[in-house]
Length: 255
Image 1 (tube, rainbow, N blue to C red):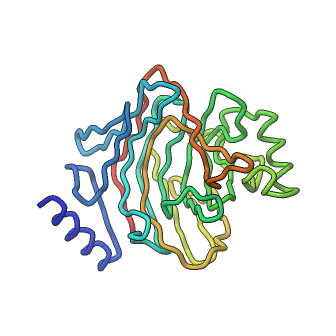
Image 2 (image 1 turned 90 degrees about the horizontal axis):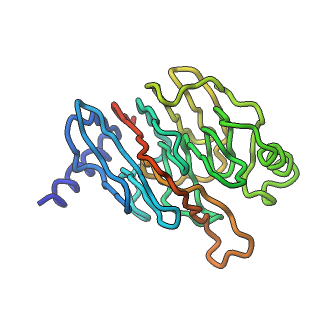
Image 3 (image 1 turned 60 degrees about the horizontal axis):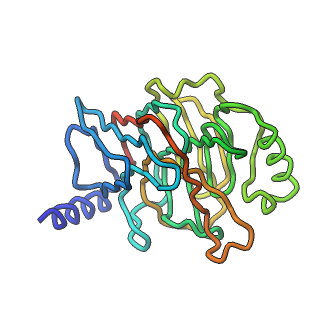
């Protein structure tokens, strides 16, 4: 019965081309994924996604999404969420569109992404990302690794696996623990990113028409490219977290 209800809602949403969730209740529209030490709470119209405490060697993740592999509903849409991120956790969190593939040559994230790691890792902050192109929104620190990665990405993105568009964060004083409205405007040749109606990034979209799903998550992993990886995928680098961290959503809209 639940599967039929989900199928009916999904079909209606795709036909109308829009979706809105105010999180008054747990909608069957979403695929609700939990890995290990993570989960969800719904309270007073807010979806609280949490992760941790979690062990370093195991992946922990709370995630909502609306498509799998060859069943992806969206192209050239706008995603708007009102969100806040609490906990300063080690790992990642994000919201946007994704074509549900970690294969290096095919993966196409179009999202805001938070990244933080204990060890040497060039991306520590909140970023706008389209494919391998990333624009810093706020940096938690400015390590040498980030500056070096920027220089190498200008020489050849293949050296570091990413193309860092600037060393200057667009909104360094952004307080992630406060409520903000984030918008990802995906069009045929570019993606614009907004925070509280202020444009913070415009990144070219250079792929042919592709499908994607909506994806929102909080987990304990950052991602790396390993040379000569036989799977040619982005690998999870999991982190230990001693406390629970939260990603709260007040609403989500696709149009």
